[in-house]
Image (cartoon, rainbow, N blue to C red; front, side):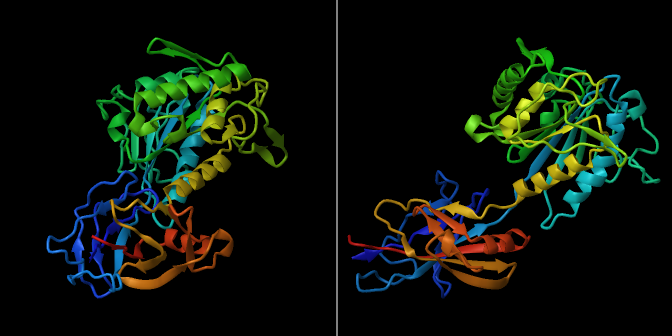
Length: 431
């Protein structure tokens, strides 16, 4: 008889581990080969040629199987934010507000998140002075001075100054063509050749995408032999949103998602939709959740059209909308920043992979061990289910998924030095 230890390297949340070391509690062990498993974990079902166990002892049915350990390396999800702004003649005030809020109510929140957020902003709009319906993003997000701290570039240079977190892809966006410019600029150089192969040069396939379009008009453009028009109707908006979603994912499945069930982006919109309020306390609007129906009503009588296609795509992908008329965008920028932080957080559940043929994982023996850096914080035991959760516990759902209880999850997510190990008992196999 022989007992065979199995090394399980679990992927916590969004990251697949590259390999692991299987040790018993005395540190004896054998490294895995990091072979890929379909769910992102790694499995090594090999055994020594002399029928010894992982800890070197000869197997016997009467022996107790040594505890093994798989380490889960925690990383936060990267996020790419693509901001598309209409450069038409009615947009000067909107662009001015974006220049102020993109640092104050967006980048500042992300930069002060704990743990830190791995994000970058890709600006898809014509570079220049906001008085000419162009945009210049100042420090700290962009690379141009704002010494008087008014949110605008002190002097607009001849070309954008990019940073490690900000990439301006200068491209003129018309009143109705934000969808088409998103598609064709993906592979098209910007006006200054900073991204010669398109804005895809600065996207990261492993990053979740947030797309924000800011315009006061509707969808009506053509690209790749297809026409995208929302007809300024709710039904037209629903149809064009579905068409664009299909085209965007086909453009790059690795960036935007392989299918409708696995989208890798969320679309947000600041458009000329109602409702919008103007009172003695100032002009304001409220973020509109994706569950609320779209509308053809505009936020002020002089607004162009409500952008039903943009509204519908926000609804389809879980993004919020906001009325452009109020020119006070801090609520939607702040809400989007919180959305980025939530996406970037590591998940607190991970799959229990199937062991190799002939091996068995005794789920009743599973424990979770959490360290911050090299400091052991605690070793945690299972509870029966989520209802039985305590502040220091986890549970196994449907014998397939290990889930940290909410309080423990919050602690791990807030620790940028978190390390999690899964301890488990191996099985006995008769040969």
